[in-house]
Length: 118
Length: 110
Image 1 (cartoon, each protein chain N blue to C red):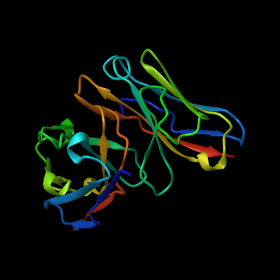
Image 2: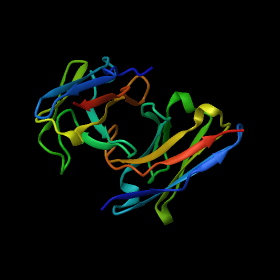
Image 3: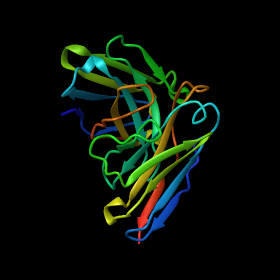
Image 4: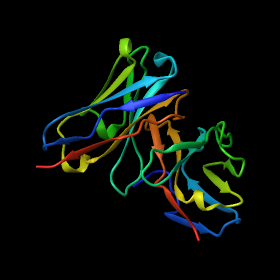
């Protein structure tokens, strides 16, 4: 079965960077795009961007352009999302999710809580 | 503020039928398919409906989706207590070249 397992919770200071990992299993990692979606406490879902694990091509939401980088290591079926220049408003649960076709997100990771606090 | 507009809340009694709306524009719902997600408290979202009206394997047929023009709807028939959750619509937006989520609807089973 498809599984996406994310790295553990992080606490960061304002201005720092965070890198969240997402290990895929149960399918061919390079076959589906990986999306990243975040959710602040009590708030809705916010799409951050996508990455094609085969080509490495990416597309980012305008809001995060210049601050987010999505990469992968195909040898270990793992995707990464790095967010820089963190501020308190970036405190949220970050999810990775697979996408068999553009716009359709089917399987989700368990989420990674990133807390930004001085 | 989400570009896809959903009512913040909805409610119904067990056995009832409820619908949740999602309003967008020509660049998103009007030109792309709509997906719906269910998020139970404290868990990751789950794909409920894709391509406007298709159910993934394992999703009960009590859940159905439809789309007309720049709006879409999720219907839940035979409401059950375990349906109490947050529901989100989503669609690709050609102008933004990215995915959009609605603001979410909290469904309460009375």
